[in-house]
Length: 578
Image (cartoon, rainbow, N blue to C red):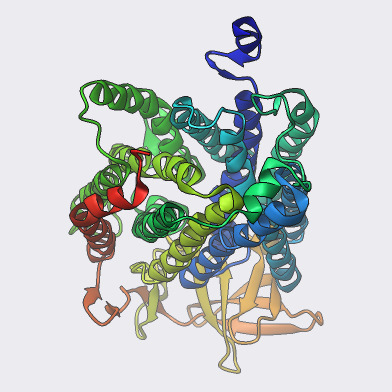
């Protein structure tokens, strides 16, 4: 018997854990690879402003963590977790290749935007079938009350973060080249990763994803099975207490993920605009910074696991809710560090990339105290009949957090936005300069946006990659095709730059409208000015990056303090002594 057990395990855990580790790794590679490119694609290829990109990001990530409620329910009642995972994996791959199509035709802005929205919808819907059900299977391969389950979730969490590490690096390498036409390759790479993960799960499931008694896990519940009997068993008082504890845990993770998910949106803007990309002899792409957190996860999880084990032996290990309180406070420290570093600097000053590493180090320690702990607690406390559904509740909290986080990100102070200033010489336009004969033209803007006025008073803009719009050109044919696009802000009509002209010392462009008719546009004289301050929730004046970042210090610290005051009550509801 002991030999059988030994042959079915690797490093003291069932072999099925390795399959789940790999499947989740590829899924997170897919998810985080695309996430690292999303707002960059929206702002640099589809020419969204930051507020609109933030809203799209918040809605997409929110829906991704809302659909697990449906996916968990269908798996529990009809599909079984195995079929739900396979359907979810295939759906997410289809969604990624839909984004590939969108990015391929990015110059057709209206069409590309529509297709991109469809691709995001497919991914979000399919994610609901995959996300809650892969987590359920981790505990299913262990005997009931096996103490190794907690460590198994830590190992599984390392798989999540290995995928989150590789996704932005590889997808960012292929997609973020400086040419918006290349974003499609980043989305394609993410889709290929999802296909590999789904195929691996399909092949390996019947081989090693089994209960300790040898039964296949994740199959549709049949009449008379343990799962079926559990589905018909009434809830006890302890079950109700534990469900209440899960809801409380879920409420507090909202505080954490509202702040943490700024990595994919407002912190991406910050890195793009305010951080020196040269670090340790390499030029760090913006998308690559989203791999810093998973690097630290892989480094810190073994250390914290050893630390918790050491405290456990001395009967000093913090309970799960107390760990979550510590995690929230650590995240608050991370935001405070970057807020103090950024305080008072002007838009042209670039901070050292080292501070982004320091910030993510605190974020990561906080995440390890909260996320794998929460996953383990939900699986241990949830009644068997509601296992997938309780994971759905957990992810519903994530969904709420991401939507709120996207909304808060729209308050990001756009200090490089321009306001019109008349009677300024043309050569002071933004950071532009022109030679005397206007043959050499260089326009730069940290936003990559040039504003123009048409004769009809309509506002149009050219929006390209940051810091280099038109550079070292003598005629329009020298401008790459993808840089010649203009979009009307009010009519969403697309123009094509055709040639330059200068009259009375003013620079202008001849553009072709979609009907191939030419229209002359002249440049108004603009200057860089900060946005007027905005009020966050009627309380905080957001007039700088410092005050914006302090919003997240307040949110994280408030959640941590509140959790600390009630953690003993949550311990009671968990009934871990039983």
